[in-house]
Length: 312
Image (cartoon, rainbow, N blue to C red; front, side, top):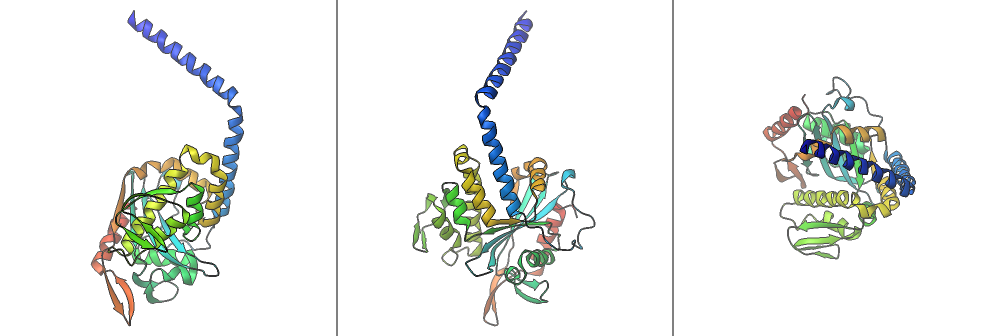
């Protein structure tokens, strides 16, 4: 008896769900056009962002990556401080390796002063100079040789224009570790809200931070995470045009729209387990120039960790 009552109750509940769904579809049909316009704006922005590279296949890849098959892959994130009439240098270099089978993502920040061979130049220099010499292609080739792993894609963010993205999402909230002043802005310790200009200064400060580049990289990740959080909120839907315009203007990537969609579908769970890897070394001057020197054993340790994660 109770089973029949329960089935009847469940049937009525499903019936009302269908009625409410139909009513919603009729009353809010206009939202469909709104969502469609968002989709069009997004695809336009991605087309602007898409910058396919004329780069030959990596010798470290035996075959091309098939994202539909959920194969592990790598991405180089470049934060470029690019001012007017200046090609800029990649002040931030972060390598991501994504393994959907393990549902994990590893994140390695490479200090910009790291001394290594610049592929295409044939001599040792600061790793961030590779971008100034040869753009994303030379950066990818140089990082690939330094880590001995294939670099499959890149995403470049113009840090100078990043303030436009922050302003477009209405600002960001970050957790600041200590009081400091930079570029005319003072940043109190604790939870603080930042507009675009403040966020830019917040991510640029390095010398007053006892952690040096590592501290700045941490603040940059905070701001990027804040943008993602704000951009995904419901309130940002009213401002999607400015957001997509800012993204299209300040981001370049080798990933196509279809590849981004596939990654979102197939690799989303990998973000549930993020491990940050630190490249240990020490600062030293060579011929009066400061470099960050990574011992061979530390370099090999990091290489082995990333190779295992990429199933190489």
